[in-house]
Image 1: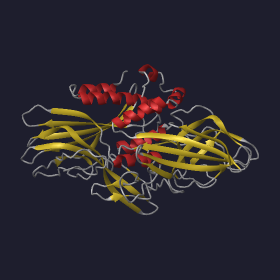
Image 2: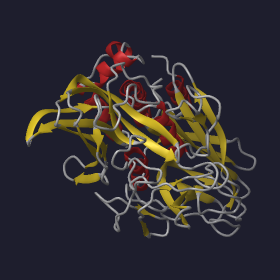
Image 3: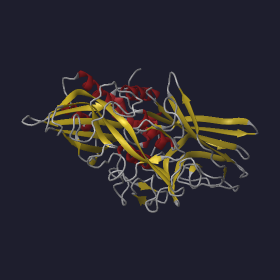
Image 4: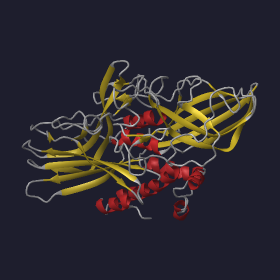
Length: 257
Length: 254
């Protein structure tokens, strides 16, 4: 593969727009995967797949690289991989291990997303009602949520910009219950494990809605939620009245084997 | 490219080891790319320091390239927000294999809770069920490893070490230009066995926790997440001391 020159890589630093450019660069992804495999490190990728259908006909379909895991997500995986506890209940940002809820409240429980900090521990990622991604019908407290916001993703994002509320009123979608994720293993030659969360949303609002952002929001514990991943949909996605939107969050890990 | 993490590695590893230097260059490049793509990458660096009686201390540092399937599955669980519920262990299976060889799966996820004082890599003096452990096995590193080849148990008999507690030595944030969290876990082992111990392997064992209060059930499980063969065996003489430090670095985009 042809590697980018250092100077080209160096200019893609830190700002949202440059990150967005980097994510689209498949050469960079190839190099990332090659280096990770050489160093025996896990290769992790994520995608958003979105499809609009009406009367059984596909009106629009997009699959885009996401790669917009936010600080909340990084802090969670740092806790669990480095075996360390939170460092701050007052600050959220560079140099702090903490969590920021959608209300902007900051917490630093022993593990920000693995502990309710008081009466014990009741996490189950795949079961609605527990600390989970899996949302019930009509719920916008967590799970896959969509919105109208167009502001580029920032690493510091902790909530969706403009949530499309649940309902049948103007600009609203009917959020369906989420199922357990679909897990798919592909052996030789790629050795990839894909975990896919998905959710259907029906537009019964009486008008078209253009979706610009999609997030993965976790219910940490009762009453507190945090966005782990936020993605801006290139060009938006038009969901006509009476159409159905399906959003899949696909997480792919490449194994050494 | 100003990169303190990599500069430090280049200085501290054996400059004559071409293989290590090539890996370090790849690591440097990977660090830069992972920042651009916003992909968390856990990088392991292990240091072995031997202090033998009447001899100057010897220290070796190497990149740890030995995350096991358990670690991959551990990360998958928390990155994909999924439970590991397969009854078998291996390619395409969502499960752990504990240090006793038993496949562990559950319809709830597992966590390291109280990671610095009770779970995770923490381990008390004389206990080798978790934390940093060493051994005398020489079998090749395997992605499916779930225990050391031949672990040095705790004690003062042949090939036994007196294990001190395994604790978090430091947790540090490095800002510009690295943007990394580094957790340094360290364990000191004393050789009071009466003989030299030739250490050839080391590993990391997580103490993880399944369960939830609603169900009233909980369960601790021990999983090997890393096994390294030493680049060169460390001879720890009787009355000598071995210090093993694992630095795990998480690269942030910032």
